[in-house]
Image (cartoon, rainbow over all chains, first blue to last red; front, side):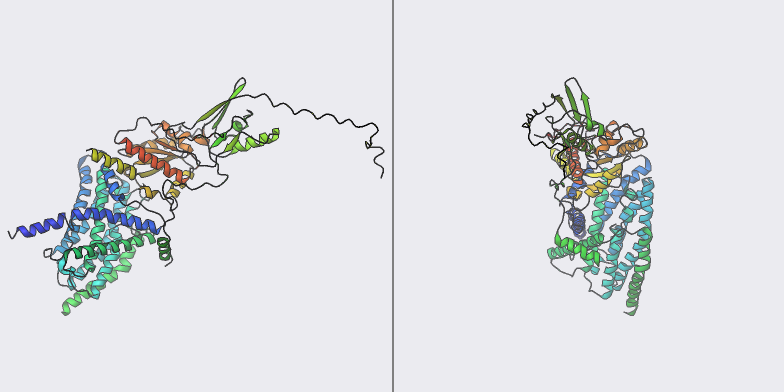
Amino acid sequence: MTVFNPLVTALARLLIFPGLLFAVPAAWFFLWVERKSVALMQERVGPPFMQPFWDFIKLLGKSTPPRSGIAGLLMRAWPLIAVSAAAGAVGLLPVLPSSGGFEGDLILLLALLELPSICIIAAGFSSRSIFGEIGSAREAALSVSYNIVFLLAIVSIAASQHTFRLDALASAPFTPLHWLGILAILVCLPAKLHINPFSLPHAEQEIYAGPMTEYTGPELAMWELSHGLEWVAGTGLVATLVAPHVSIAWLAACIFVAISFVVVLLLSALAAATARLAIDSSVRFYWQCTLIFAVLAISSAIFVRFRS
Amino acid sequence: MNILTMLWKNLVRGYQTLLFPARPRVTPRFRGLVLFDPALCTGCAVCRFRCTSRAIDFKAGKGEFTWSYNPGQCTFCGRCVEGCAEHALKEGHTEHALSQQEAVPPIYTTQGELKKSYTVARRPPAPKPAAPPAAVPPAGAALPSPVTGGAQ
Amino acid sequence: MKLWRRLMCTARRRSPWLFHMNSGSCNGCDIEIVAALSPRYDAEQLGVRLEGSPRHADILCVTGPVTRKAVGAVKTVYDQVLGPKAVVAIGSCPATTNVFIDSRTLDGPLDKHLPVDVFVPGCPPRPDAIIAGVAKAAQILAERGNKPPTTTVAIANAEEAVKP
């Protein structure tokens, strides 16, 4: 009996809220919000409300070319791994208070957030297409650059609170270090979500379609879904860190959705306002401009830790 | 900051798009499909000569001719209309058979769907208007003769 | 299953993804395709997305009279487009090679190599005509389902253009 309860809670978190049943429609909703707000900011009318859902259904109905050998098997596996990793990351988010968690689930969350970009890189290479390889190389360079900042920021927040549990972090009091870390995460999110100004790996028309060039049909539907789930997970992480601690469950859920929505709008405004940076400028931005702040954050966290 | 104020103004002003089935009006003198009036055509075939893409075809027969037009082949340059107008003016007509529709050509789904051809019977040339009765000058009237009339 | 099929038909009609291919065009039609994505005409209101890879697209928009060197490329790209697909010939050039009739460097209208579903006449066609053509192609896709294209359906939508 004592084992039963956490299992049920974990399954409910993974499958219902904030897991699959909530995350997949939320992914489509956030994708639509991004496209629609970018369109409105460009004086266009943008896609109708159910557009990402119709895209998904249509892609499920397209045929796929025969894929043979190990490369073919891998090509079909990467999108599924990306979707499961992103859905798992969303399921781990500490949205509801007292929803359990375990020691070190922050580390698991970071690993799951990292997997979709690794899958994109691997997918570009296993598709044996030259455009895929170029796109994957760019994605790898960008990933190395922003990940250092991202991980240093999160680890500094965690270290200053002496914990690696997500629910403890979500309910921790706000310190200036906390805000510095959240700002660093917000700066890394455009690169993680492949939007302007760091949308180079998915550069449309420039290298055909980057790592996704050879993908089609249901596989592409899975990639789009994993992209949407990455949006939910990324903005959800910021939302859980920013949200005040509330003990009523449905209120916490509403605050979570509201803050995620605001973060999506901010990122869309950034995407509409900027152009795509070339790979050298994007990498240089993360190494030259933001790394120093991440280093400052982690060193002040260590300093605070040793002082207390 | 400029781009952010631009984004804000765009959000506040709303979208400027034409929602789907609405199409914008074309300007006057827009060159659309070529329209043919069989009643006015004299069968000179200047339009076939001037057509840049062989969209107009003219077959002369005995007592009739066939004029056909393939809008799919047409490049909407308007040379045929200009040629028809010039030729009609030279012949003394005020109206000519070709004009250009000021509307966007329609989309179609089968090759050659919009082709049109007309078979027009040749008309006999229009009779010349009757000469006015010759004005008989009265005898001895003051018809200024060039010799005497030129006295300064 | 009927529900799924109806859902799929609606999805195909509401989410046409384009791939644009230039088979020797003067670029006038290509510029008008880009203009169709601009704020005034906004193809995205129909769910149209211009994709970077032919494998992602449903509708292949071809411009240009097919030059001899481009024939192989056009056929390869058509084979790379998957699943239920439609072809839109944009401009008068792919429909009938327009002013380049009798040119030695061309290999026939697009009809000779691919089954074309919608022809959008014009030189260049206006962006709203291009969007109307793409919408018609999306509708044809929705009705076609998974059957490969054999013959195109003649729809009499030619307006009578005779002066009264």
